[in-house]
Length: 104
Image (cartoon, rainbow, N blue to C red):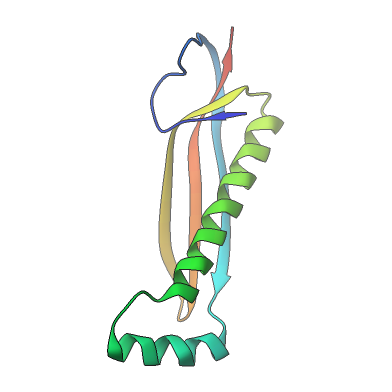
């Protein structure tokens, strides 16, 4: 499955658009890591546990988007976008979406 944030696929001709492919996940912070990240927040520096959590969530959302595109019979997903929103205190949703396309 070819995934791109551009409108086209290099050397590929889009012949059909079966729809929008999307995937999402909601991840929550770990209470134990929340304490250590709170201390890090006081002294500065990257909040690595949170970076890792969001990276994992993005990967999962993209994987689910790919599965949705396969269900639609697509060869690629173009114009891919990622969004993050807070669902609850300590929990965030990451959504990946794009245009599922079939190529010649």
